[in-house]
Length: 278
Ligand code: PML
Image 1 (cartoon, rainbow, N blue to C red):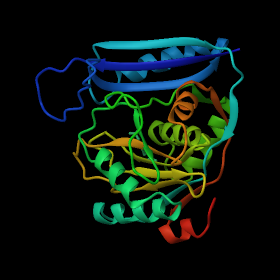
Image 2 (image 1 turned 90 degrees about the vertical axis):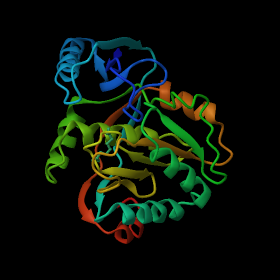
Image 3 (image 1 turned 90 degrees about the horizontal axis):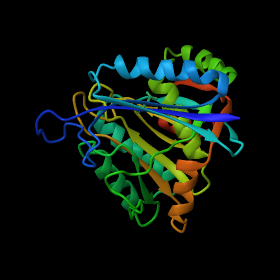
Image 4 (image 1 turned 45 degrees about the horizontal axis):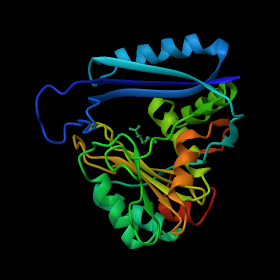
């Protein structure tokens, strides 16, 4: 039997400052979060880890830490991580060109790319992801303030060790990369999703990614300028997909990473696109 353990730490806003990461739902400013699927005997250690993370985050001391432990009754779907690669890129301007190059190559339209770039260029207020139709560029997630929150995902201890070993070959073995790759791998395992674009909402973190089943998890350095409070996630779905089915999978279906695909160093976009699945 597995349990989902989720943590969310936040603090109340002190004074009004536009684009300060405030949550318009009134849940406060996000400090940190964590999520995993655990066996009963692993829960105590997972909760300790969540608490330590919430109290030690560089974004400050939280006013509230919510930890939710929930029994999972459905056997999790077992997936592998997407292959990981870093795209050679030196500037924010060329990052935009590369995003377009990756997405156009897998039939995401100019219109949908424009919608997505607008979303991730806004001050990051939404904790969840936007869902955008890949041809018309229409945004279809029902609550624009909340977005869609990918949940009920985890990695087995053995796969976690293997992932750390792969990532450490490129000095990337940190929570941010590990967790983003696990999340992107669940998103890519959702049939109606064609691709994901992610720009971190952390002002100090300027690497984002474009991910898809076609070319894996492609990290993009300089996706935004340092100190920018913008960011967000966009999932592109097939034009005729039913959003509710995709949302239900992303938020509710338990998914466990049990296998690790290879991680690679830095490559040019054309090497990655010409070498689908790396
Ligand atoms: C986040 O802030 O959680 C998103 C990080 C996205 C990029 C992670 C990476 O460096 O691969």
